[in-house]
Image (cartoon, rainbow, N blue to C red):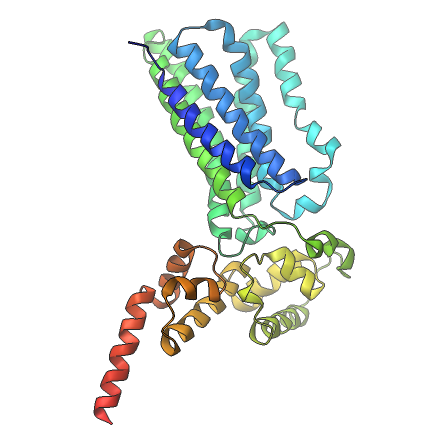
Length: 358
């Protein structure tokens, strides 16, 4: 019977995920290219993992080390491409190549001091993991190109990726302890299991983040040119209130929330303000993120449609601005405390009771 290492099974799953990303990618999108490169690196690392620990091919170890180093930088670049850094120097070719400097450093260490390669990778993973977590501290609104109904999921995916990178450092420390305590008796099992879990979770996180990204349009490309204020300017409370008042008009009168591809960047373009100012204004004046703010309007519209029409819930999902039913159900439950079907049933029961009383 042919022995198929478990990492190869994971490779097949990652390959399916990669094909989906390639099929859905937007031509010319550097963000898509980064996530595709990231998932490809995950897939290759899974193959190398299977060769090393499934067939005991020690010769692939240098490749495994280089792939591990590349993954850390690619993960940071991919998620930062969804933030306001995407329109600045982060995605310039010369800036992208800067993140491959750690790979060159590790290559040099492997050539001169191979015993220090593992330590170098641990430091690189720790730095990039902390960088992603630091980036996530700004909240879901930092992901200005993520769809607002999926910004929270993308934000969590970024946090999970940062934690997994830091977790890899902890696993390496555990392996070092195992070698000093039992001569590495449990290390192969620890390496295979933790790598399979981490690669699967990281691949899923990358897919979630890219799936919730909106496609670029002319408004997005022109946003930086049309914003009259510097994103570094400090606004007063009155200025924040003015931004929110203008945003309320867009939501109430223009029903901007019905745009299923709406993101913070597009809202900022409509207001002719930097995305950071819009986020700060909503957070300060309403105490919530922009994604929650917009989804509240969407749920309000869904409640109206559930009360006043007989349209199916699925149709109401799209009519109120949600792109997926899962996000709609989650946000509806958050706002009303019940499912859409339960809400409609309650409204019907209430109407029947009122009619009976009259």
